Length: 560
Ligand code: GTP
Ligand code: SPV
Ligand code: MN
Figure (spheres, rainbow, N blue to C red):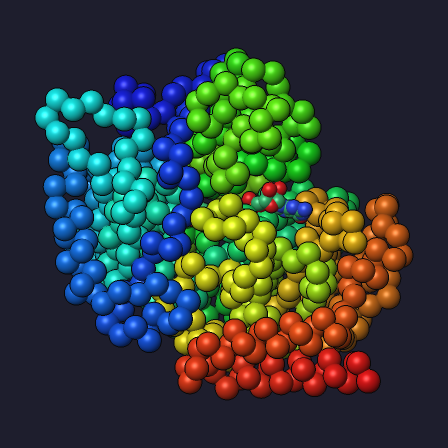
């Protein structure tokens, strides 16, 4: 596949001494991120897709797709990719077959999923599987020369049929639009399977934390796209005695064991991480993971054939080639790497991934974190009062939009459970499902975190990255039953002196800012939450209304 892609000019080899077995792909500039406006959940009834999903009548959509796909692969080779999400043969593993006319997709799927002929044998023996059809939508006439990144950006369709467990994707070759084992299968179809079968399919990273006394806790974390999952998954703790191991960075499937515990596993086989902002200072583990055997997309290239992106080093090297493949002009004000440029490597490249990371049964899940990018209002860390309140925290996450999808970067939007673009059914039913699973999950605690609170000058107050270990440390002590948290209207916060900030240059005023709960601005936030929840009409679980009312009354008392 690599030779083929080299010959077609879709990828180029990087300097094999500086970056062995590594390649760079540059896309069509119109095909650079997930296209949420062209992503559909086509359930039989519109109400089953809910107000947060694009919907189209399934029979109409099938007609449209059949028209789009008709002849769309002409002149190209059609590949069949049998893949597993989860280890082949595992009790929680799901199988799929992606058919595609993109060799870049084949190569990427071979990194991101378990691609194996064994999957076909299992299917032959009766295993259930998800059909996933993909075309870049760029047929070639006889003798017509190809372009390096074929696509049909004006006609992109990423379509899930939740009742049929079926995926059709047309027109884009990028990321979640085309690597259909990832968001389409493991989350959109996965969440429907999970509801039907009694488990959870989530947009979460997954880590194993070892505390100084040897206690181990597994922690899942749902943050919206480009909000810090990969970084937290590769945390290098700034506190002595702590160790963090990387079990997953984007998707986690969670299963009740029937005895009050939850077990979690990462169904993917690789990392597809945001490049910009990743450097030896901020995330050395990611940098180690991509020393060799990496497929880069839309990053800049250095004069000596290596890669670069904003945030890798403080100053850009001279003579960069930008992600358009053109000489980069630093004075242009344009980035050299696309803000959603990515590195793609197998899990085993990651030095903090333990050898048992792909254990078939998964790992006991002790805590779940919800996060987002919030310049204001949301404190550094909050422990929920209980599971139901935790579901409310997850349901009401909002985050400033990033470059991972099309849209205005920075705009605040509600992104419940970081699943807004990934939930395959009515989001209100999904909250109901989480509440139901909570009845079988008496041992798992839920927290909310926010690394992104800003001061009046617009600077991040919290140093973030490795220093997030200090927040993990408090969470661990809560799991050990050793914290004396103090309650606010929002939930529990670290008690006096409980958050270890030794050695940080944090002023007392900054600590206060990090945890400030301003009743007035929260009351207006509650009004926005109510408006958001009201959009789900009669499908909204009563519990969500109760939680909102309780929050309002706690805030009003705090104000009095
Ligand atoms: P997806 O792969 O799109 O789902 O993204 P992700 O959630 O894995 O996000 P990732 O960890 O790649 O982080 C995206 C951006 O957030 C990068 O630019 C990081 O530098 C930045 N970031 C991550 N953690 C922190 C943090 O603790 N503090 C600050 N200020 N920025 C962070
Ligand atoms: C995300 O956007 O959350 C990603 C990248 O992880 S993609 O695979 O394109 O969905
Ligand atoms: Mn993601």
